[in-house]
Image (cartoon, rainbow, N blue to C red; front, side, top):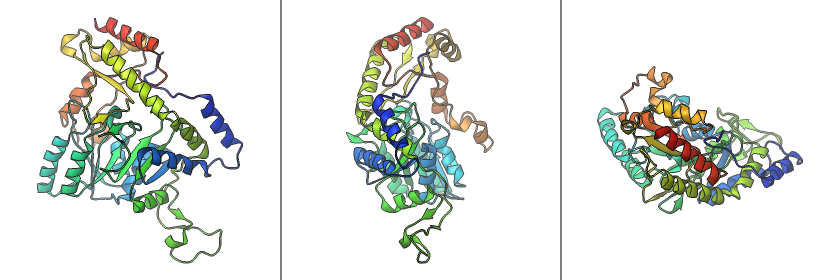
Length: 385
């Protein structure tokens, strides 16, 4: 089976993890801040906070921005459920903005239209979470301009997008958002096994997120309600969580950062090769905006179902049966039972639903060989034609 995505671990990665195992620190030590610094410097952000998952990063980002009961968080329906769940964790209400038919990202035009309606109804969002789907950046300048006009905060869900660029600047630099979140799950661009990171240029947000990821506990006398009793002293000054990243995970991530540019270059070469090899098939290949440079976490095709005999399910099953580990990203969040119980329904976000009905993610990872990619294409051609 050729998987749709997988990690790329080399001896240097293994050696880095073993070095931590042989050190004095397994959980909180010197490697976590080194990893944070490496990512912050790569992206051009002032602060980076490593956590145990991108879901945790989204959660503490919402907490740092004081999202709570009575507030609204808006995001894309075309994402993993964590992009919306982070709002529910904080007691807020969640809504969605339909996607752009070209990029499959949250559509700035639809956002502008929805904001006008929300302003009249008195239910503007406190936070908007654009999702850089498949690694392609959203139009952040347009979304930021709307944020300035309507007064909402922005969290970039860049779980797919470390190494990508927007207007020739690294995703994660924070120019158009309050906080950016990365994921280091094994199928992502780089991995820490499980893990995530939140980046910001605002020192107060970094301080809050650092507090929330570690039980709400501080050892900083400046933050305490009274002077410490001694060098051992700590105080819980907020309700936090145990969202910390371990030294083992950080060591793997720090080692992987050395190959990030190589991973991105290979993914872009594979994407260009897919474009060429699939050009004559009854499918739509991913399109790119001129101002974005995707990290190519995913390569999603859309089947032209009116031009082929088999259904999407039949194509999917045939590819899987032939050893091609395709997947589908994503089932629209608003059609999940938990969200439909809140009042969402099929038909609410038609562009996301049209996309979902036709989408299949082909194998895309840095270690994918040309020969295996040829096999993917050959099997797909046989199934479609």
